[in-house]
Image 1 (cartoon, rainbow over the protein chains, first blue to last red):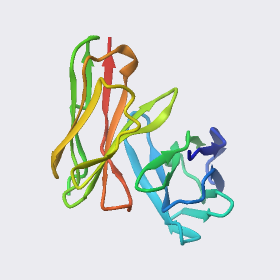
Image 2: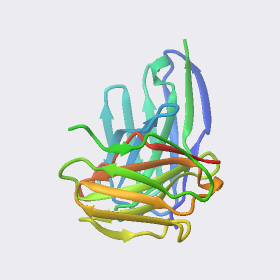
Image 3: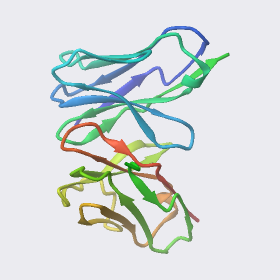
Length: 110
Length: 112
């Protein structure tokens, strides 16, 4: 059974810092991996999707990498802003079924 | 496109009552998913449909839960009878085959 772990569970940083969120998974037989953002009381917004054949994807200040063989993905956020404060979730897709990590709650302080 | 639409956004009901949650996927998507999110267990997949057919319902917690997808533009998740431990946020998501999943805003269910 696929298990997805995110470290750290919570992170507080001052505005402007670059930061890395980590995601690990136990079964490397995946189709793709998605990073989501969830604001309090809201739904999930898809940020990036990395196919299993890809190493990384970039969107603006966000960069996600994937090392399938080691079962790891990272989400890099450059020049963090208070508006980046949210919970970030990674989800592994194996056979059209997403398994989510527990999320990292990010607080960016002005 | 309006995205994935869910209704109601909030539902408060008493234990023992029937609850029906509704979802309209993004037009053209052929896969639909129901998830549940709680503080204790995080986000869990309950069931997913492909081309209106249930493919995997192993996440449905009990027989009190049932889901249907009568056509490509509508799905329901029903809980009967509801219990306080069913209180959670229920999300519907849709995708085209195995690509990016798009989530609805969720239904916050409270069972008293």
